[in-house]
Image 1 (cartoon, rainbow, N blue to C red):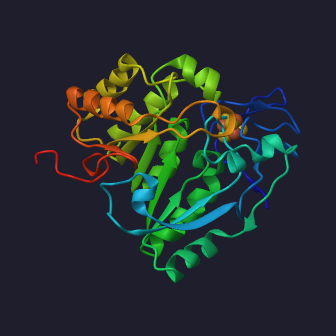
Image 2: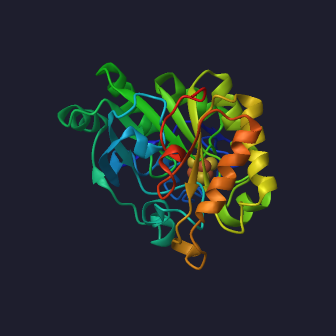
Length: 304
Ligand code: SF4
């Protein structure tokens, strides 16, 4: 299925600027954006995956790294193929990179926004999560689903790389109840060399979403030798603390995968070190994934 994309500008020279994310692709007739799911067709920017969900699962909300919003609620998680970044450690690379690595093949299960909401209600989910791949690349599908979900009394959460534009945030946030934003590192070279993006747009999104009053929680994968130096961890936690010490920070252990299969997993010592640095910065809620002592991945009051 396909739908006309929003947030685009005709540049007058036959090209169209996509304003959904900070890649700011300018595309001629027939060209695909870096996400590989937006293409110019018949003079219009088109979302090729509208109505095509490539992953649908029922999770608890904690699985989406959201610990301070409707704890233990059931979530219908959906995603499509395609992504605006190309992270070498992506755990969903079979979805996110699928069209780029398969000659622009578009795939997914036909599911209209109404059918997604009906599924959520049928399986007693209270929340719909737009996750697995970058939701701003399929903003129109998210929006139409989130609108129907809201009307049905469901909540919407957005799990994002933080690479969307302010226009995209302004479009979707009236329907979004909470956001999980990935801050993958604090160096521009990490974003450029490993993710195919840059750092500043992500920092801007975090600041902008927080200023708009949306509940946000942040995630950082800790990748040995790439973003786990004390100075870089401190730069992340200091940035968050300057914004608001109450923002929860989830430190995610890295597991070897995709193009980073040759690296070791994150050590428990390194995770503990990152936790300690975050505490030194004044962050009140820091969580670490499994394999650590319970206290590092349980929701607890910062005063206790
Ligand atoms: S969503 Fe981002 S990557 Fe995709 S076409 Fe638009 S600007 Fe390019």
